[in-house]
Length: 419
Ligand code: GLU
Image 1 (cartoon, rainbow, N blue to C red):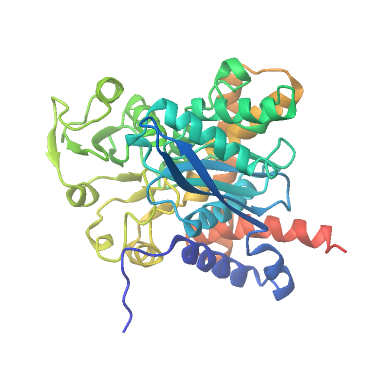
Image 2 (image 1 turned 90 degrees about the vertical axis):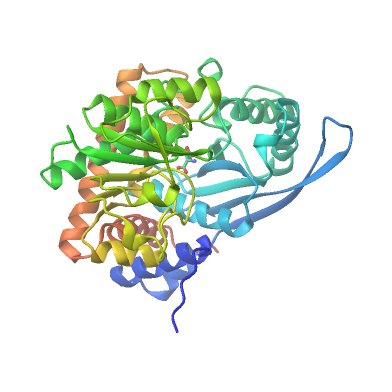
């Protein structure tokens, strides 16, 4: 009997995505074995003196999936549920993601299993610095460049940059992206993921001949990606009827005032209890009658058991891996247009690339320049994926994986094997 539980292992999903794309591309086995698995995996112990004086041991990882097309690139996640398999999956997706938007990076990811919501700034700083020291042999502006991910931010990047620079003896801003502007960060980086999500939604609406204005939207997750996407959709005239964060979901059938929700989130840390809204359950949110659903939090949110209840026409995957393969099949079957994660949320790493380029050149661009370049990259990638979808008659996710995997396969073929 086929049983699908909601706790799909993200790495199994990543491998399955790869195999499907590789089959569709007709890749031979030699190429497959060279690009499928992570090139380097580092597990480290991170001992930290906590505020009460005792030493706590955190387990942490840095996985470099691929350096075929350039230095490894990817964020660092702080979350209680971080596992090595999750980090391997996220590193793998980074490889295909960078290739989809055609930036000269491979893929990597880091993670620390910790509960940042219950740690002080001092504890977070000590943990970040010790983690940086532990992964130091792997990272560097020409090797592997960390960035923010779930529950890490520009301050985390500043600590990594400082620890790395102090160890080397001179400032090396290009070792991380998503830094504060004052340390060589790029304008537009903090909103880049949400902005890229918005750009791909615009493309999807154009493709489906729908007006963005007056469409209804639900956004699950109101962090960096979800809140910015909600804001831009609101500005474009869409009705964002529901948003949520880890504290709860809110709903207003006439559309929420997103700038005010953002203000409340900034002041209180949550969206729950927003005055002009009613609370709904997470299950009700996913089942809302709306045109666009934006899952913008963690993996496996939509799975075999709840996918049938989804009524949206477009799903824009701002999160990495929010749909299980079973959910994918159900939603494809219902004719839902899915903008897959490695395309939809690639705006973050794209502006990370711009930041890295600016650091290398010591020459900085204005915000509009960053936005215009980002929009060009996202819209080109969307068109490229759509073209493969139409030519090969495959779903958007497979088309995106074919584009990413195909570019890496081409590069490895040209490079050949060492020795
Ligand atoms: N964490 C983001 C992602 O999953 C950004 C990675 C980066 O900028 O390197 O794409």
